[in-house]
Image (cartoon, rainbow, N blue to C red; front, side, top):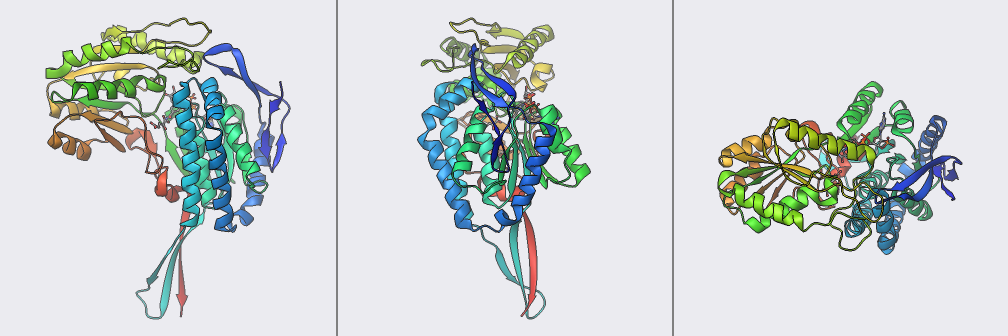
Length: 477
Ligand SMILES: NC(=O)C1=CN([C@@H]2O[C@H](COP(=O)(O)OP(=O)(O)OC[C@H]3O[C@@H](n4cnc5c(N)ncnc54)[C@H](OP(=O)(O)O)[C@@H]3O)[C@@H](O)[C@H]2O)C=CC1
Ligand SMILES: O=C(O)CCC(=O)C(=O)O
């Protein structure tokens, strides 16, 4: 099997690596991917530093053209790249193709942004002086990404970094290097100069840690667990660099007595179980007022009976496998914790066996949960959700906000008054009314508050806040 190599200073390099295994069929090796050494990381950072002066002054048309070309190729190859994504991560083929299209749209959006770079000219408070306010790139950006969105998250970090004139050292999650390798290959062939984008695959404890330890990086953009996020933060404070963190969630979905039951059940099933619940925006706390509680639980349980858990590539699969054995153990451990805490297992809870050997877990629903249980406070990151019964809207809102996290928050209601109040008072970066808590647009800000996120928002034109630094220049006329 040929090895997919790292890209350092414009050269493909690396002869040893690790197998990328399909979680829907653990007999299948998706590919062999190189593992970078600490020296490789140092070389990649040095290459990105050397490439920065020229790239930061490159014309906006060059950046626009390369990003646009990359977006067009990703879109043209959406079925092939979507299949690769489904094979390496386990989300269903339609979900994987959708994510691939989203990555293409992100590249096209930032291709446009490259042409819209603008500053401000304002009068000084002193006579005969002009003031110009401009944005400049930061320098070398470290991009560290998780396994759950293997093409969209790399896209929404790399595209703005390049658009605003930064150079990049990119470390994808070791579990899913395939889509990352593909987009780096696409950008390289689209004409990026040597060293502008460097790929260093391998383990976080080696490759990621070497990036955190480098004093050269001017910024690190990270998505992943709270624990690793804290390491990124501490190392960044140590080295005096900018950092941006997207971490966990324990997102609430409130269902009020006046909700349209069909809308509420569709939104809850999507939020909690699609993409196997492996989304930081997934809802694992379904907070339901008592007038609709029993009808909602009955309808959601009926819905769960119709969802097929199977091989991600099979047509008719609604929920693919869990990403690997470690995450499966986390999920099943939490199911045991939920039972021991006294929540009632209303649906699922067990492993399922299919034609191909994979990490298949039933969608799992607890009822009679309280908001103080561990299953309601800690991120599980699997197809496991709990229903928490509350008296009224006021208790629902208080319960929704009673969490260390604050990424996404949803409500199902037909009351304009409650929808408006919830939008204003939910302690979250994103609020969804009659929609799933997960599944966001590519052109608007993405991010949260409290323990979920730190630093400026990702995506859309707000991405400029992280990837640029502001300069104010004064000129005597
Ligand atoms: N908010 C989100 O979108 C995500 C949240 N999570 C949460 O995190 C839990 C664990 O997932 P996991 O994949 O282990 O998350 P991690 O935080 O370990 O992984 C995220 C990224 O950080 C890298 N990394 C790991 N250790 C270091 C380090 N010391 N220095 C620098 N980079 C490092 C990883 O590399 P590598 O994978 O190669 O080790 C990966 O690229 C999940 O169960 C879930 O709760 C996970 C993924 C996404
Ligand atoms: O819900 C989405 O569309 C995005 C989720 C996400 O970015 C994540 O889970 O890391």
